Length: 220
Image (tube, rainbow, N blue to C red; front, top):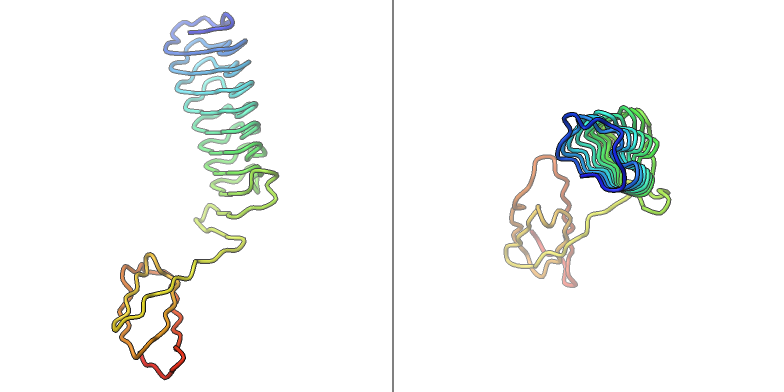
């Protein structure tokens, strides 16, 4: 189904495609199960399948790659590779040979070119246009605040952060759930027995602050 223009392709074996807009799916010949909405969305696509591009110029350069999803003006405009997901105006707009990238936000990751497997959320560039498996979560205004970053080694860096301290209930035997209360405190009203932390995980950091009440000299 093409609405808004006639394709310049031959449609020789193309099937299951939906295009709405001027020059949308303009060159399709063998592509299957593609959806494009907006001026020149998927405008260069000849083959490839299961692409969804919504917005002016969205996915415009892709000719034969499959499984791209772009929503927004210029999103994935220059991508010639597959398996990318971009949401937001100019999101992932410079990706060309990079695959398996996820960019969410206006201009999110719009400097990535050949990098693979990057996840960029917020209005921010990737640290490298060609590196793989970068993670950034930043603000959606101008990307000046990046709360979280990660690299291809699985290492995650926080700019700053804390775990909320939870007050445990004082009792003859004090119970502590390390899964839901990893950072905890308790004020002793008498000498007590401290139960072992429940549900710990190997390598987990846990912290317990024990406070004496006004009487003091409590034991545990």
